[in-house]
Structures are given as C-alpha cells and as structure tokens.
Length: 219
Ligand code: MLT
Image (cartoon, rainbow, N blue to C red):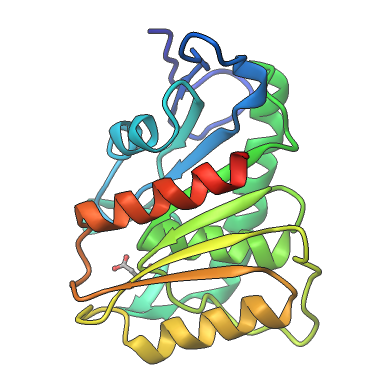
C-alpha cells in the first residue's frame, strides 16, 4: 500500500491511499473519498470505513490542525456545539484548497470527490458544501450539526447528501439535524436522511445505509 504523510504541497498531515479497484472495475470510475475524522481522531481513523464504503476507491484523509486539550479537530469551538465561525470558515477554505492541490499531486479526478465526515469532520464537510460548492461531488455527513447559516445559499442542485443521524444523540439534538436537512434542501441538494435509534457513536446500520446510498450514486 502506498501511503504518504506531509508532502511539500501542504502542511496538513494526511494519508493518501491510491485507488486499487477490484477486478472488472476501472479505478478511474471510482470516486476519491475525503475522510474527515471526529474530535480527538486522526488521519487513520476512517480508512477502514472508506475501504468498506467503496472498495478500491482512493482515500484522502487529512488530520485536523486544531488542538483542543491535545485532541485534533478541524476548527475551533467556543464550547461544545458552539463554533468559532470565523475560524471554521477560514479552515474550510484551507481544506478545500488542500483537496484541490492533492488532486494535482496525486492525480485523482477533482470532480469526483465525495466527503465522508464524522461529527467534527461532518461539520467541516457541511461547511465546505456551503462555502465551496463544486469541490465535493457529494457528501456523507455522519452526526452533523448546522455549521452556520448563510444569507445567500449556494446552488447544490447537483450535490447529493446523505445524513446519518442518531435519535438519541446527546451532542446533536434532532432539531439541529432537521435544520441542516432544511438548509441543504433550500440550497437545492437532494438529501437522504437516515435516522437510527442510536447515539453519537457510529453503528453498523450507519455503514449499511451509507453504502447503499453510495451504490445508488455510482449506478
Ligand atoms: C463539533 O465541535 O464539531 C461538534 O460538537 C461535534 C464534536 O466534535 O463533538
């Protein structure tokens, strides 16, 4: 397996796993998965999830640069669930630039990148949908919140979004998820909401739901 950390083009610590499509599938038809970990995670956390979701797809997995009591995150927060929006927006642009630079450095198709974010990673992925439409072809947001509300919404008519939500999530109230669904729909996105009777942690059912959504997308 060919993986890398800290190439010259970026100061994001990350892993890149090139596509290795299973027999009969051309690697060029598969998306590249942008894997965005949760608070306290790192660039290794979601590699197995990515492999399960789209076997053989290239994986790009950066580590969030913010440290909160030693835990890596993608942006600062003022308290749990209260975001430093200025920092979030700046770091969203930085991450989007990283994805574009990585597509050149690693020769993957910049128009076929699907984000898979969990918790804090889902929140910056949602922010990227709003601020940098076009960078992502689609997104799987697992336990996301509303990153911020914009006066002017982007056009997400061609950007499908899967949301994996837990009805018993103590960090993300169901109302937040519903607001995010509404916001993305107002921007024109086709949103698939997958509600489970679970908490903030991921379950096998999340993976099953996300996988069948991705299968439909690739048809
Ligand atoms: C966040 O700060 O992004 C959310 O509260 C989720 C979390 O990381 O706990």
